[in-house]
Image (cartoon, rainbow, N blue to C red):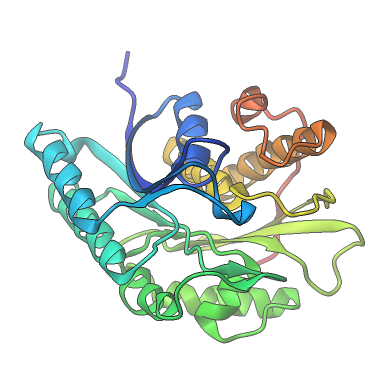
Length: 293
């Protein structure tokens, strides 16, 4: 029997609810991965509630934990690094240092970056300097990027309101990504002109082509936090297993739809990450990827 593959996940942590590592770690574990989680913050709950307790952990803490893992002699067994919300430039620097250390020992390890910056309706919710830091420093190291539509437009200064525009924006961002890797862009929460009413789409663009998966739009008000963190983890996990972009997109989106449908049915403020655990292995609703390029 093969030992599980290993993912280093560097994200925020909340004790109550599911965002950051609290949204990404469990689905990956449920899919059979060992996850080495490093927390960039330790909060009571996500900031969407308006009130929270806890602290931001300094970049030195992050670097020290990576150093401790390296001292166990196992960093070279890391198959991928996953990152999400970056509160400061120093945090971004510490994450990139971890990626460089992993790649130094295992050059084929992937770096999957969820460039958390904002979304449609809420606008930018990170410090003003973060978009430039992600664009100029983080993006050139990323193998897989999972922006939502708002973040894709922010990174490219290019509209993505139609399918040709979204494909062009994804192409622009791919040219800036890590040249040695697969350079996969997964655009989530895509609402575009010409799509059927009451649907939402996810687009994946890679060397092999581009695929679109469409699902019914589940009316969650307010929009639930942690959905981007969860889908980035699901896509990365399936891509590590299969190496197939279209299959990974189908599986991640299908699992995500079932998770959000369950959340809607139970009418909870937090995504039903634990209750939906079977969906990460065998989604009960399956949506096919349509090749669009």
